[in-house]
Image 1 (cartoon, rainbow, N blue to C red):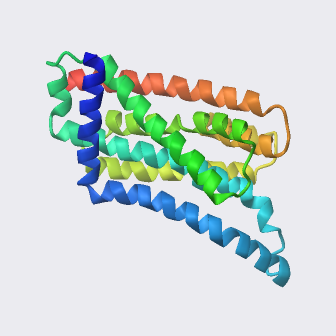
Image 2 (tube, helix red, strand yellow; image 1 turned 120 degrees about the horizontal axis):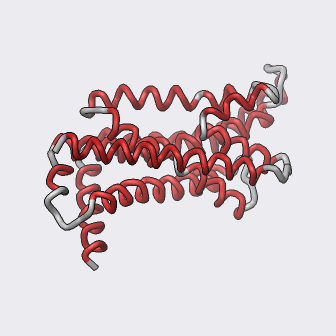
Length: 250
């Protein structure tokens, strides 16, 4: 009961922090705009290019790559960015220091900080892919893929909290996250087996699993499992660093 009350208060505080920061709201709006642009622009451009012959390729062949980056990866990354900035705001306000003298264990606080952005990312990804309606896998597979991709959210949030001292540094890290995500489109254009080098970037495996699902390849589940394992390891390492940062700054 006490834990539920603590989580509810943390949620209320998160809502206040996000609601009063227009930048964080715009991050989420930006993702929605991307989904809407893909929904209405890609089919039109695909038809236009096919009729006019303006490009030497079929745009629809690129749909899996575009969805993997713009909807699946960015959906989780942007959720993580929002909560990463919330964590930095709490550091600036000494809210995290205050937690050390409350009944809420730090480990429970970290679990909350991992779980909430993950859940939001899952909802965002599922909604965006279904609403966009482009290169949509079967619902069961989509749910599993969204769950695996959502792990990027706590990775991003904990990365901000563990390596940025303030929101200015957080902005710099957000650029790095966005740039790292470009490895996914780059992997799409890289033939196998050289493409597997991108597996050093764990979110690649979720995108690879998505592409394999669309291709009807049964190996998609193995790629997804590998991606989940690698990302869970990253979360554990970043959570450990964040825990040290909390006590270092106290």
